[in-house]
Length: 190
Image (cartoon, rainbow, N blue to C red; front, top):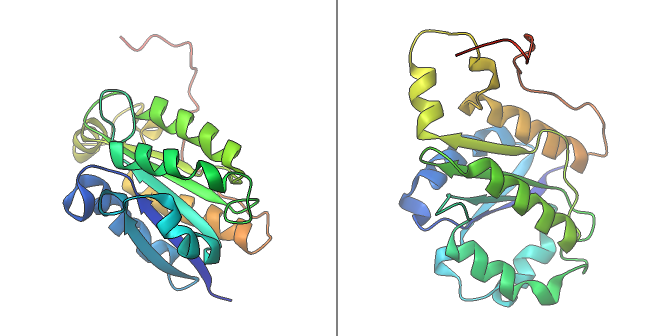
């Protein structure tokens, strides 16, 4: 079966931005099991105009940049106008993943807050379905392998995010986890 997954890009950069570049890296991991549609919310006036697309979607990826510790204004406007769709069949029980980009800081907080909003709308969050990628991560991962790098999200982790989203759509529980630093968390690293 081919699932319908809609990517909702709520960044200010739209199709030309860093968030869109990360989403482009995600799409091959969703295909061929999913038909993928990308909507750049910067170009959308309100959520009601997207109701038919949202209603026929089986799953979602919400994406945004980080702007002063918050998600993008296109995503904010979308969420404000999507209130009337809360707990409706547009969202209820459908799986969602979240992709956040950032320059250096604030993205994990945006991810956590956005996941809370999505649960309130009625969406289901699979394990390992939240991803934050930053310029700081990108630069740190370019060099030689170093201690602690397993705790940095990397673009390869998008394969795991896609797998877990599709696994929920298929009704399975064969979830995958990305690498984590399993060394002593209390060790001195400074």
